[in-house]
Length: 420
Image (tube, rainbow, N blue to C red; front, side):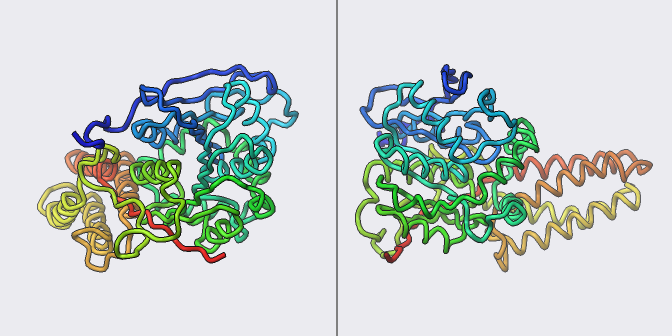
């Protein structure tokens, strides 16, 4: 039996742990994953980004545990299930230095003396601050979607890039983010964005002594390739890897590739000179493969999805005109079919001709079309025959299900040489 076949499909479920932290005078919630047997490895701590919590880190935590790592992801005070730090006079979001201090206090209370750290977005800024201020606490560091890029160090520049990222993430992430943002509150999110956006991280990067992996999703709009390379160059012991087909939250959209990448780095397998596969293409982790037990649970493969696109488009362009569904219903469904045809021909999947749209963008367009059809069936189509309204609503549900269950293979993860 191979190592992969012996793994559970997505690793163990998280354990919910509450830790009393004297400093902020509150209990901090965290999610923890354990491989089931003692490994003797340094634990891995996952750090969340702006307005988020450990919830969106679950896919990575489960898979790292399946690969044999002890993993823990705290909800830093004021986020997720953790109450706000009572010492803060202002109720708004904290800055990077404050969150780093809260992290150290939680580490002490949790009995974690030394660990490796994975930070996404603002979590990457916290990881850098921690590694620079407390090098004795840090074994290795992974900076995924590292911010802030100097191009976007003002809130009015940063937030549009955050919105642009959304269309490149897989649809299943969107409801998770919305729930997290609603839980955090708009005011707290805006204040944290303001306080963490103008962060001169380049001044601290040269003081990060720990081996560090910089990870960029190819479609990340908040982390440019130029800035990712500069971050790597400033690190005394840094290396850069780009995950094809992924965006800012690569650990969610490509959890299998991300978990194997992080595990390889923690094991020291990326510490050699730049390079990769036999072709010299820099590949360190291959593309998502069908049947991979670490792959995301999205059962509809690309070929089947492409076939459904073609059949659905043809049906929407023809069937409505043969049914007594009313003029607005026929027009809406036919327009949806025409838009779907253009989308299908432009998408980078087996039915595409030009293949300029990444699959996640295609899936988000389908999900958006589904929501629009459901909304129209409940509003704009009132007064039309009921059969047509039900057909529009049913098509909307079908679009949402198709978008949510379709596989979006990502990868490979490719190491990028960065001249010093």
